[in-house]
Every structure is written in C-alpha cells, then in structure tokens.
Length: 128
Image (spheres, helix red, strand yellow):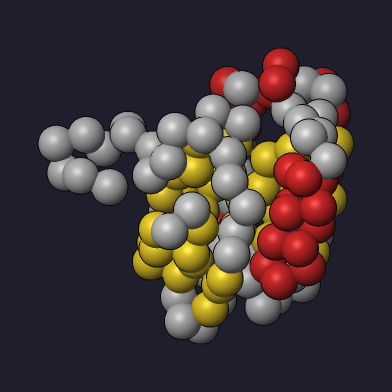
C-alpha cells in the first residue's frame, strides 16, 4: 500500500488467496506482508495481528459494506478464538453471518465461497 494513499486497496476487487505463511499472503500475482481484509470491493491491508484485536473498529470496513456481505470468515491465525457476544450480535444486526476458524481453513473456505460467487468477506490474520 502506498504511503500517499493509505486507504487504497491492494487490489480493487476480490480474488482467491493463492498462498499464505511467512507472515503474509499471495493473491492475483501480488504478495502482501501482514494481515488482510478481503471484501467484495477489494483486498485491503488489515492492521490486526492477534484475535484479541478484533473488534467493531477493526471490522469497520465490514460494517460499512455489510449490505453486500452475507458471510464473514475470520481467520484467527494459529489461535482458537471466540468472538465476543456483542460483536457477533452487531454483525447479526447487519445481517452478516460470522464463521471463525484458523487462517488456513478460513482461506480454503473463502476461496470455495468466492468461486461459488457467494457474497463472502474474510478477515485473515497472517501466520508465521
């Protein structure tokens, strides 16, 4: 992401995640170091490094685009995590189902759902 355009997506459209590990991801011939937020309008850098950092603020882009998202997959890196009830309820009020799993399974599920042209988003914490 360029310093002069901090709100610019890495890619202005969704794309399957081709590889992950070593602290980053590869998608659409690009690579990114750090966590990712994959939305219907693009793939964005996501400053979250651990599950306990996930809150409404961290998911602001998801809430802003909720009208175009049916399912949010949260990849929690290598840690098992349960979302706080208030976060789950806030997503439910926006009609977004949430499914939480480790990052590897979240990527596989995201790729399948994206291939099925479903309205899916993924918040993916990078793994070492």
